[in-house]
Length: 408
Image (cartoon, rainbow, N blue to C red; front, side, top):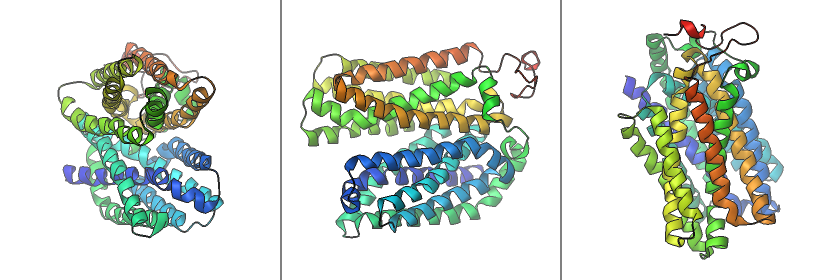
């Protein structure tokens, strides 16, 4: 039953990957239909990010009240409704309105699923869980391409994805007894204990701010790398635009393949070792891009950056219950993911301004700075032993419910 539930858990991750890539795949057709500038995709993306951040911050309270299984099924159902609503949109405003519930559904699902896998499964399954997102993200553009080629337009791509999400909702509802059995067997702290923390409490935990900065920098680096690869290769390295777009897939292939391989490596290596390994590989890749060694070195470097990114996010998430206490992990994972989305929302556009007004050649340096800050934050957390080490201002120990000298 444990592995049957794990297989069911993997399905929504594929669904999230499918949905996440629809906007980018369909936008060249959508913006001409809506008669808006091409840059307006940013407004839709930011609306989705706002929904995700709000949901991330509240996911701990919701799961604590309703249970992870119920919240997962409801979240996928909300996502399905948003897909169907988007497919029926006839104006840019309507598309933005449906982007908010989509963000709320995906955000709640993201935090709930990550917390559940971190609590109940080994680190390798967390890596494979995130690998499923990569599979979905690879299939999403293909599905949209089929819809466009078949004459159904971008609307059909959204409808097909909505249908897939609706089927997943039915599967998740049917699987609720498995979740309940698992929660009873493992005393699921997320649903059964009063460990919900507010944002203020998390900020007062030593390393609370540090872990938020760490996640901010990681997703800022990953999203900036993915968004500006093609432009860097075309404008700085000198590749033709179509060739640069094709080679940009090396980065995403590196992440997907890397997460599949990371699952096996975690059998031997601890989470912190996997994070350090990923950081070193990413740094080597960035240096290959930075040094004037030619286009082949740059391409190899971009693949290495993706490969290095692969284990970082899953292993950081998986380490959260051990660092901050299982009863508090859902709240803290929600804040971590919210911080990650803030980074992915703000930092890629910031580099766009730098590229436009200074030089796109600063791309690898920008990535290197973000990676360095993330690495420093990670080492600072490890020096604290991953636990809250100082008493909070209100005298309550929110992490693991005990003072440091009681944790053995």
